Image 1 (cartoon, rainbow over the protein chains, first blue to last red):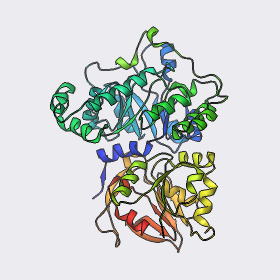
Image 2: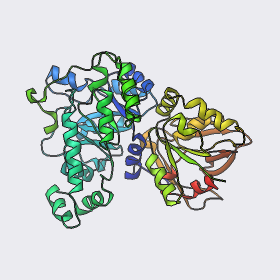
Image 3: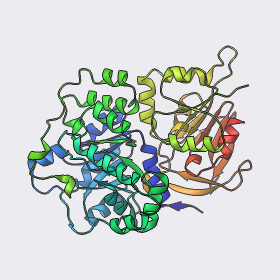
Image 4: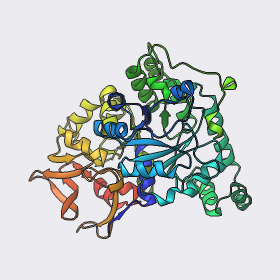
Amino acid sequence: MEQKNTFELKSGLAQMLKGGVIMDVMNAEQARIAEAAGAVAVMALERIPSKIREDGGVARMSDPQMILDIKKSVTIPVMAKVRIGHFVEAQILENLDIDYIDESEVLTPADEEFHIEKNKFRLPFVCGCRNLGEAVRRIHEGAAMIRTKGEAGTGNVVEAVRHLRKIQREIAELTPHNIKEKAAEYRVPTDIVQAVFEQKKLPVVMFVAGGIATPSDAAMMMQMGAEGIFVGSGIFGAENPEKMASAIVKATMNFDKPEIIAEVSTGLGNTMKSLEIDKLETKFAGR
Amino acid sequence: MGQNIGILAIQGSIIEHEKILQKLHVDYSLVRSKEQLQNLTHIIIPGGESTTMTKLLKDFDMWDVLNEKISVPSGKNKKLKVFGTCAGAILLSKFGMDIKVERNGYGAQLDSFSADLVSKQFPNLKGIFIRAPRFTSHGSDVKVLVTHDNEPVLLEQENMLASSFHPELAHETRIHEWFLK
C-alpha cells in the first residue's frame, strides 16, 4: 500500500539535508546563486531578517508569485516562512506545493497563545526553539525538524551558541527518574521526553540558525553538534554573496579541518552589517 | 581478500548508512577527501542533495578520482564497487552507469511516499521515496532487482548498484548485504 505525508516521510526529508546549509533567498536569481554554491535547500522570503529589522512593521509570509518563481528556478527543496500561529499562511504554502514550511519567529507572530497544529498538514514543518521545552512542544505539535532560534538578522552567533548549549545541557540532565516530571514541566506526553533521553538527542533533525555570518561560525556550530546550518542574512547581506555562500558550504562540510576553513575564510570581503543584541528593540527569539 | 568500505560523507543520510553497516558488523570509514578514496574497495553514496554533492566533489578534487575508480580497474585492483541511494543514484548516472534518471521524477515533497516493493531477491521490501529520482530508462546490461508499479527502483550493472528509495531509512540491511557479498 502506498502512503504519503507520514511523519516518517516528513522527518525523512530533513534527514537528507543533514550536514548541509539552507540559505535565505529573496528572489529566483539569489536562489540560483545559493544552489550553485552548494546549498541543500533555500528559504524563500521577501526580506532577509536584517532587512526586516531595518524596515520595522509587520513581517508576513511572502508573495506566492515570488515563492513560485523561486521554486521554478531550482531543483533543491524550497522552504518558506509563515508567521507563528498563522495556519492560513501555512495552508497557502501547502497549496503552492513547496517542500517545507518554517513557522518562524523572524516574522511577526499572528497568535501569541498557540502555534500551528502542524500534525494537520501534509507538508512538513521546521520550527525554532531556545531550549528543550520549546523543542519538544513543537515536535508534539508535529514539527518534523527543529532549528535553534539564535537572534536572526544580527550577524552575532552568541545566541545560537547559547540555545544549542542549553538544549544539550537539558538533554544531558534527563534521567530515568526525572522524565515524567520534565514531561509535565514541558507540557508534553512522556514518550517524547523518553525518546530524547534514549537517543541522547532530539527525535528529529536539529539545525542551528540565527546570527551565523561566517564560515567559522558555521564550522563552530557543527563542531558543537549541530546537524546542519541555516544562514539568513549572512549570505545576501554580505559584500560578496557568491563567495560567502560557497565558503560557508565548504566550511560546513569540513567543519573539523581548520586548514580548509582558513582557506575559504580568506578574502571574503565585508560580512553582513552586524548588530549588538543588547541594543535591539525587538528580540525575535523571545517570540 | 579484505574489504575496505567507505561512506561518502559530504552531507545527507550518512549516519543512517553507518547504522546499517554497524548492524552488519562491518568496518567502514567516512570519506571526505580524495586521499580517503584511495584504498577503498566499496563506497556508499548516501541520500542527500545531488547538486550539493556534485559541487563539493568537484571543489575538493574527488569527482575525477571517483569517476576513474568506478569505471577503470587500476593495477591489480578491481573497479570500485558503488552503492548509491537516491542522490547517490543520480551521481551514478553521471559516473557511467547506463541509466537515465529524472531528478524529483515523482514530484515535490507532497508526493514523497512509502510503498511495498516487488522483488524476487528481497521479499517484503518496503521502499521510502523522498523527492525521489525516477529511473526512466536503462541499458541492456542493467539488471532490474526491485520494481514499484512495474518501474525499476533498484538497478545493478557490474560494480554499480543504484536505488531510488532509501533502504537506510527503513532499517533495511539486505540490500547492503547484497552490495557487500
